[in-house]
Image (cartoon, rainbow, N blue to C red; front, side, top):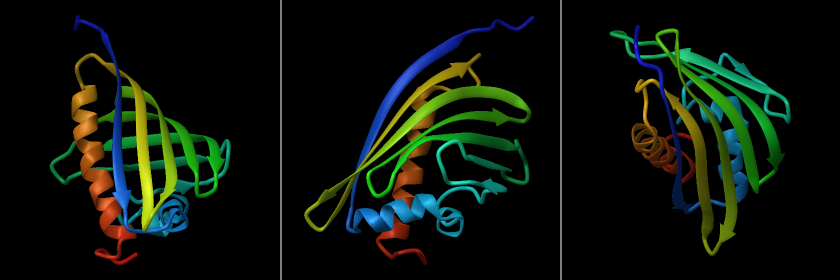
Length: 149
């Protein structure tokens, strides 16, 4: 039998984007815009209590499944969601994520905070933070117009 354990972790990633909060919020709230920097959703219901679901991965595997429920949405200011992440049919984590959008001179400060329970060594807070940094860099390219927005 495999040893079961949970590693809890919290991390915060901050970015400053040369785009207004409205544009950054839209990149989260519109499924076509979000697909330019995140996996294309199969289900996308951007409202409190609504669900976002996507599944996919590289041809050589594994398949990752993201399944989120929106808990709070304050347009152009805050997005809070809880989500599970599975890899190859195995639950690897459960998290709560808060995205804060703060208007600053010439743009938006984004503060991304994730609090997670990571299961049995399949994922770690450090690996998730690394992936989040890459994701938020890609978001920046989209909202700043380097990638078709």
